[in-house]
Image (tube, rainbow, N blue to C red; front, top):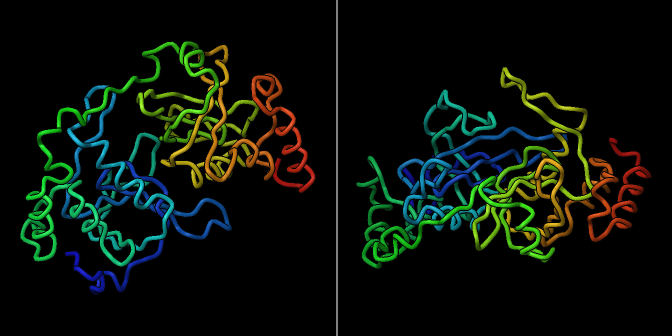
Length: 314
């Protein structure tokens, strides 16, 4: 079980990693720190001894405080270096709908402490199993409960449940008109390919499928047998975007809708425009037909020339 100073035998043998994604308030997806040889190996780790509220899907609503719980952990560790120890064998069930790594159970250490301590102290998860008697975690949970932190704030529980507008349940063109091309706060939730993203717009919780305006990466598709088929450099392009944007806070400017009803737009991160970065490293080409809808077609062309000049993949 976890210890207060993070110096247990388990912590001493912990392996280094980077947090790539935060699927829920008690689970993280970590990856190897070295990506010089391509996308590194990944592990999906559910933290032992705690349970966080479950997030919504199309058939069920959020459990109370699920979004706040996940958002606390996302803001705390996304993109940050951690160490981890696996404490239980991998499940035989893949970790996500895209055939990711199987779920394992363990402890992740951040800034010298197990994540369980960070989360329970903030009130965003409950103890379970033997952790209920843990000499470190049990008093932390008792203090959080006494002060009504996080999930223990029962008076506001009902108002913590989101009203999500799922993709396909609203008029995409109407959304473009309503926002008037002004950047909107958003979180990138999934990266099917380098230039094709799924995001959640804030504060309205509109789930959108977005194609990067003026940019086209090599395609990925999954066959009927579930096996992923990738064009050359498609996985590299997806990893380039995932490692920078997955579960990150961004801004999205909606700029149009294609013939299939997919939204076209630009994703802006605090470190820049992801479309321009993809083009500069040669992992995308300019898509002529949609570049004219963008606010910066000349910049896209210049970035593409830089990628070509550097003799990078495409």
